[in-house]
Length: 131
Image 1: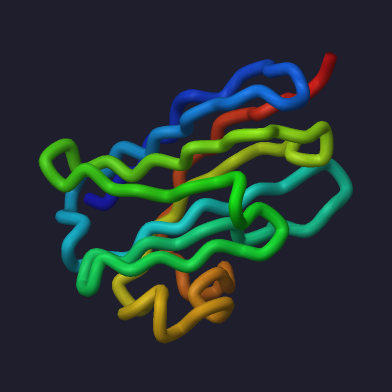
Image 2: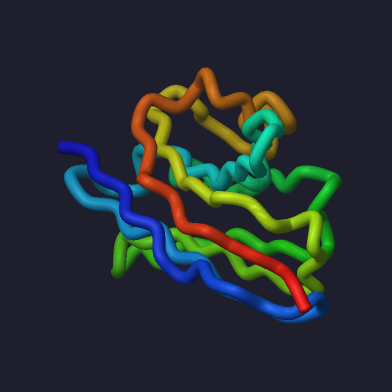
């Protein structure tokens, strides 16, 4: 059974950093893509960043590029999202999701961040950026 568990959220001041973790079980990451999404109250779910196990490439949305970095630890079957220079507008519930249909983040680009590709979702972790 595919299972994803997010952790690492919390309250941070503007300009601060957080590292989110997405622990996967029931499958191995080398056959899947993992993406991070976020959803703020009253707003649509937004794809943030994706990493694919097949070619180890990544794609990151322009809204967070240069501030957020996705990475994977295959030994721990865990994907991370390092978030730096956080802004109040980054406040949202952050989810990770898994797909075995996204084959290459690099070649698929922004398409890899469409939620319809993803069949398995975690419960989310709240990130609040406020002074």
